Length: 343
Image (cartoon, rainbow, N blue to C red; front, side, top):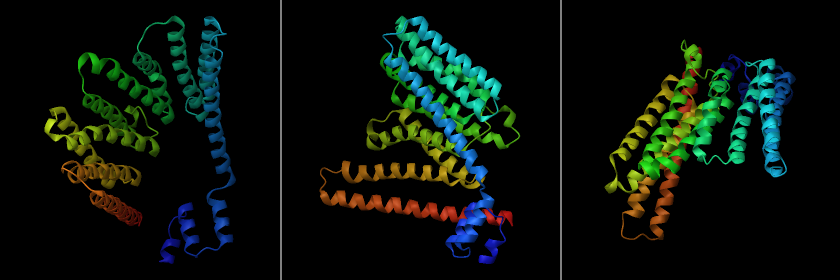
């Protein structure tokens, strides 16, 4: 067994496993780590993290600067400072290179400042616009920058803005004036986030040139998949709790959840093996299952005692434990399949 592991291609995870198994002593482990992860790797990582944190702190400082000095500043000074910041960030992004991380961060900063500009404009001239209009206009204005940057962080910010605008539209207009139920909102949110999960997989295929996002980092897909399933889970839970008064659109959301969860599980298990999305899907399915069991055990009865609650707690432990064991077995199977493919 040890010999077969030593024949594999070296990586830091394999070296750590050999060290844990006692095959490598401390001196050999540290020597191998220095070869696989030299100081330049850590320096590049630290440089990138400092760039991100510095940009975030600078943008936060700009926002709080306007909040603190709002009354003392004239409107022309406010607009001049914000617009100058946007212009400087865009020029710096172009000079630094739109495909380099520095240029991407400057473009992200410019996108955030656009939102600050819209907020200052609305506060200065009291336009009377609803909050959803600010977020939707913000999303429209920075969409081009997000598309050309191919930067997952900027796309994530854009999606947060777009989702917020859609939610506020439903809360301020769609629900009160047009009678749109929250199920319609959940379907729209799930469709938007699910679409970006789908296109984020095109980066490694021949369709990369038509993709809006080719960098496809794992965290991006994981967060959006969780948002997609969460949006569809709410109507599904509602259907389980009050199935007698469920509307057709609620049933549609439940069917969409089942198809999305099942299709995503098959995709990430067979076509694009990845344990993080599988864990998200299984966790969401456990929540749905436990709500269903809890409804039968606690809500459907005329009364329930502490014994019912204890029994439900044991069921929660059993379901989560079974899910954990299943995920561990899946991880082992995927690792074995990967080794078999490489050999």
